[in-house]
Length: 298
Image (cartoon, rainbow, N blue to C red):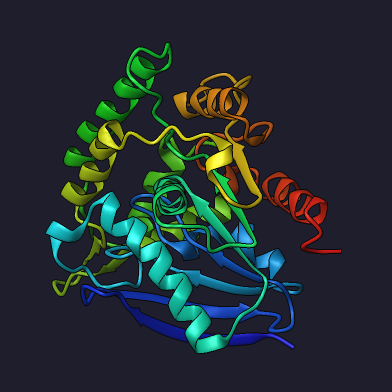
């Protein structure tokens, strides 16, 4: 038996978060979301094999994917961290209490970390895929991460926002160096998930580029380099491969976060920052092994 139930959640500031419940309603509940500038339907190659066994709640972060673009002044990590808790609470209110695992990627991982450290623990387990972890100034990896985020800010402010067709973005993903390791299905999925008709016969990216850039810049002032002991439950840090040629700086910063601060850490062989759509099987396997170790699944 599988479900397919759309939902819209209203945050305390009025913003709408759109998602859907899919999978096995009798399974452990997974809340899964995405990285900055992307949308959850682009991660299908990662989550689809989970649907037979898990009660999966997929959702787009505010201003992404199917969620409406709202007040730009509310697009910051403090608000995104509040969203994490409010989404969790509203799902409990609507669907009841159940063993629940939060599964986050990139900027949503950072929002979940901020929520867990500053607002409280609400999970049976937390899985963090390659958060853009920026160490404190003075750390040997601060400068590489600073340069990485600054380059992303510059890229985001100049990126293309409109396309004549979805196929044009698919072609761009197929030609792009940053997407070279993506599973090809994910290029198609992500293009469809991140574009909307622009009312002029073409398509536009959902997330405005200045909001994408703002999140990259905020990574440098977030001051979030926590100890694992600050998380009140089992947490798995799954990161890009530090041994891979051309790997992003997040691979090294997350290895440092894991080893220096006591996290249960693993790297995905051959995985870059978009590891869930580059190495979906390996990413799932590490997550499922962790859930089994914690006694959450059999």
